[in-house]
Amino acid sequence: MKKIFNNMLVSTCVRIIMKIYYKIAIIVFPIITISMICMPSFLSTYANAQEKEFNFVAVGDLDCNINSKQTINNIIDKKPEIFLALGDMYYDCKPDEFKKAFSSLHDIIYMTFGNHDSWSKFAGLYHLPNDKPYYSFDKENVHFLSLSTESDLQQNSTQYEFVNTDLDIASHNRSISWIIVLAHRPFISSETKHIFEKDDLKIYPPLFAKYGVDVVIQAHVHNYQRTFPIILDNLTSPIIVTKNMTINEGTGVVYYVSGGGGHDLYKFKSKSPYVQTQYVENGIINADITEKALTIKAYTNKDMKTPIDTFTILKSNNYINTTPIIKYIYINTSKGNGTIPTPEGLIEIPFDNGTARLPVEYNYFSQKII
Image (cartoon, rainbow, N blue to C red):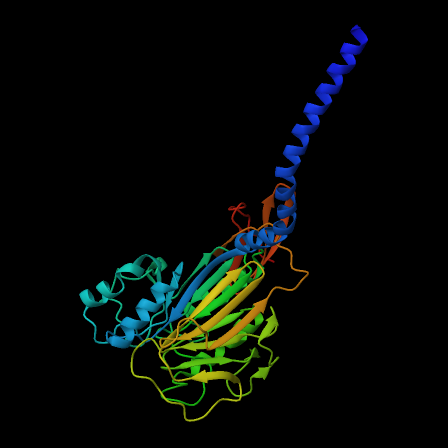
């Protein structure tokens, strides 16, 4: 009797468990099925969201008029983390008027000085590190270098030495994926109003090619232009590396002119053989930057939804994001060789051009000129 009871109890428990199992399965199985179908798409979307770093907007030559106000509104609509103001931003604007127009962008403006800009008149309204009209800064995995085409540009100038040193360091910094140079007057342009006004501009493009600059963004000429990826060793015979709209990093330097901020537009007299796209419209450029891609889209004020020009630079497949290298300090010294003490012993370092480049963690050294 006891055995029969036990069998009945087991049978009853099994039936109850099976009913619970089937009810759970009816609920859970569709969820699992849907998850298996949707998960790849979700993971892809999540990965893209995680990969996206930030965006910036760049434009110059605004003024205070209806066109420039529309440009400012379009900049705000793009919600940039950085606004690169490429010079000649205010023309006849009064300081209070200028400050009011850019009030919502004040904290993200980085100014590149133009020929109509006044250092004293608008002091304090711009991000100008070290109180110099040329400077550099890093944002995420991007190194920005802002030149002053209104300052001394000669090869023996302080600015030239700064640019050469800065790009040298950035090109060796493994935490930097992209190098972008900003300037007001253009290094290359189609024939239009007031270009090639300074011969000293010619000595900088070789540095850009040498140190792997990805993009140079300029203004001064009141229109939009984008070159092919080129090697610009001088201004007379650039080399077109490719005519593709998507390239791998290291395939030449792409030069932009984004001077349609709002001031009077300049018509083209001709098209440079090195310029791939050009048009005469007010508008901006917006760059989306990730670890593996830099995509720049140009928009006109008439249509901010559809870009009129798009160009993408890709990291090569064998690119590896490694640990950032040591930062450096520069010490003026006699030319020759010197040594610095490290945990691994003395390291000999050459002193080029009277400057020693030393890792900051070894901020002491013993000089031995030979």
